[in-house]
Amino acid sequence: MDKLVITGGNPLFGSIEINGAKNAAVAILPAAIMASKNKCVIDNIPNIEDVHCIERILKSLGCDIKTKKNSATIDSTHIASLSANTDDVRKMRASYYLIGALLGRFKKASVELPGGCPIGVRPIDQHIKGFEALGAKVKITHGSVMVEADELIGTNIFFDVVSVGATINVMLAATLAKGVTTLENVAKEPHVVDVANFLNSMGANIKGAGTDVIRIVGVESLSGCTYSVIPDQIEAGTYMIASAACGGEVTIENVIPKHLESISAKLVEMGSEIRENGDSITVKSSGNLKGVNIKTQPYPGFPTDVQQPMSTLLTVAKGRSIINESIWESRFKHVDELKKMGANIKVEGRTAIIDGVDKLTGAVVKATDLRAGAAMVIAGLIAEGTTEVLSIEHIDRGYPNIEDKFKALGAYIHRECE
Image (cartoon, rainbow, N blue to C red; front, top):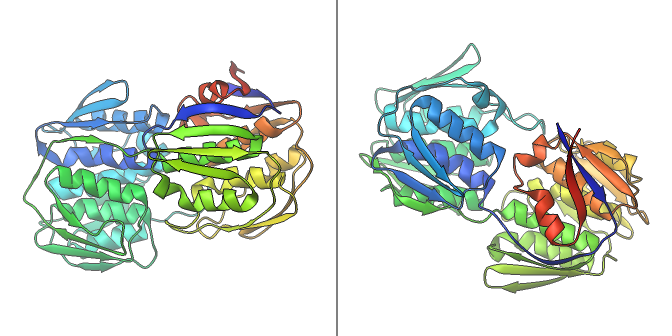
C-alpha cells in the first residue's frame, strides 16, 4: 500500500490543468454499450482507478476497448454477456449504470449490487421505481439486480427524491423505450447534462437535461460517436479550496467556471480573490480567511463532494463555521482524522460546528473515503510539520496524479510505499 508524505506550510503558485469529470466518465462509459453499431470514441477521460474499473467490467461483458492516454475506443457491437458479476462491479457504486444501459439496449440485465464509498445509505429504490414504470420486472436475488422487459414503454416518472444516479440510469433505459418519457424532479448536475449530450450524440432525442424536467423521445437504436467528457467540477473545486487554504496564487485551467459558482462564492465570502478567464479560474489568497456557514445541496447548490475538503479549510479560518450536510448522513468520518491534527470540530448528526484554530500539526492520518482523502491531503499541506496520509487508494479513485499536481505548485509532497 502507498502513502502520501507531506511537509506543510508552503504557499502554492502556478497553474494546473483539470482532468475530465470522474462522475461523467463512469456513466458515459457504460452508456457506450448502448451503441448497436459503430464504435464510440470517448476523449478527456481521467486516468483514475474508477475509470479503469469500469473498463474492466465492460471487457468482461465482451466489449472491445482500446485505450490511449485519456481516450478510449469502445466497440460494443458483439457483447457476449448481459450479466455483470465481477469483483469490480461489487466494489464500485457507478456499476449500477450498467443496469439502465443493458436494459435499454437488450431489455434484460443482471448486475450485482454496487459498492462505493461508505458515506451513508444509498438505496437504489428510485432506479427500480423508474425501471418498473417503463415496464420492466425487477428482482433482487442472491445479491444481484435482475431486470427484464418484453418492451419498454415511455411514461411519466416523478422521482420522490432528487437522485443523480436514478436520473441517469432511468434516462439510459428510456432512451430506447417506445414513445415519450418525462422525468420530473430530476438531478441537474453538470454530469447529468453531459451524459444526455453524449446520448444525443449517439442519436438519442433528449431535451431538458439541466432543468427540473427531462423529456425523452425514444429512438429505435443508437450508433457510435466521438465525444469529449466535460472538466471535473469536483477536482477543480478541491484545488480551488487547497489554493485558498495554503495561500498564494493558482490558476486552474480546463474548467467551466459556471459549474464552480457555489464554491467561488464561498471562497470570496471567506476573503479569497477569484478571477475567471474563459476556461480558467484563478484563486489568490493570503491564507488569512474567515469562517462561513455552508449547507450542501444538489446542483447548483454547494456540492457535497467538496464538503470534506472545505471542512479542512474551515478548521484554520477565523471564527466559527457551521456545515450542514443535507445529502449524506455519514460524511463526517474524516473529522476524527482532522482532530488528530488539532482541529476543533464538534459533530451533531448532520451538522459540524468548526471553531478555527491557529494551526494544524502534522500527524499520521488515513483517507476514510475518496473526498475525505482529498481533505486530509489539504490538511497536510497547511499543517506544521510532516503528515502521512494512509489508505490513499481511495484518493486514486478520483484524483489523477494528485501529488504531481501539488508538486508543480510548490508543495512538498511525495508518494511512498508503506
